[in-house]
Image (cartoon, rainbow, N blue to C red; front, side):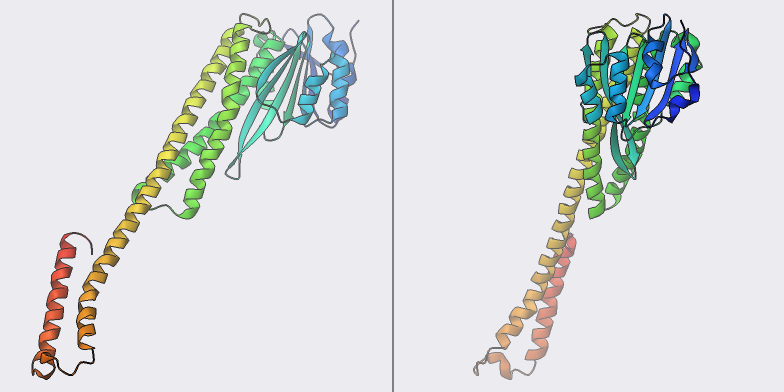
Length: 335
């Protein structure tokens, strides 16, 4: 017995982005949440439901429809999870971190996936690109979508990893620009602060990427669940992309560390140059100061006081010594 649905009403539920049933790689109907379980139990069918920051009540409805584990529902509601793969009976619970750049800062979100026989539920929280393009791409390939839940799991993870690329490209371009500025001048305090923020953002992104490698490895080798053998190489491809992103993050963090150190070294070198110049001019000015101090003493018996050419001799001596000091400092690059 088939299940009938008044399609568009499913999308009117707050928090539900899409809810559809598929058979043989083709979308056959939009479904209501309360009908999803019946559709999932039909032979040859599976349900794909996409949620965005759903309420606890909505998650509990899905729990009733697909017999989801309470701990997984609790994790999906809290949305502060590390990337992981957990098995609850016949149902898999996967957590992946999404990434976007918002106003120049890295914003991380989360996607939780419930995968079981006849259903896939994606739950998005926080910063994340819309999955509509990925869903349209999947629906345009009925042969691949015919693999059902395994292919959707791969498509979602691959989409998340692909969206790391524009984040990395933007950060990489900014890092290269900072590198170029370091070689030309000392960085401004605001630029040094930006160096620190970029390095911290890269560390946050790394904590999102590295655990996901292990998740894909388990899916590739079927450590926790039997994945269609035709799908396993696809998860290996996602793992390769993740490792490449990880290598790029590590390389950029090293570049930023070097840039920070180079900026400090250049600043110290500039301070050394200024100190030398001040010391050189202080030495030059010390000569007339010392001579003026001697003749400023209130002694009555000083041989030079009554000398007719004493004033000119003293000035000549001051200028000669100062000129000699200036020449020496100039020759050594101190002034």
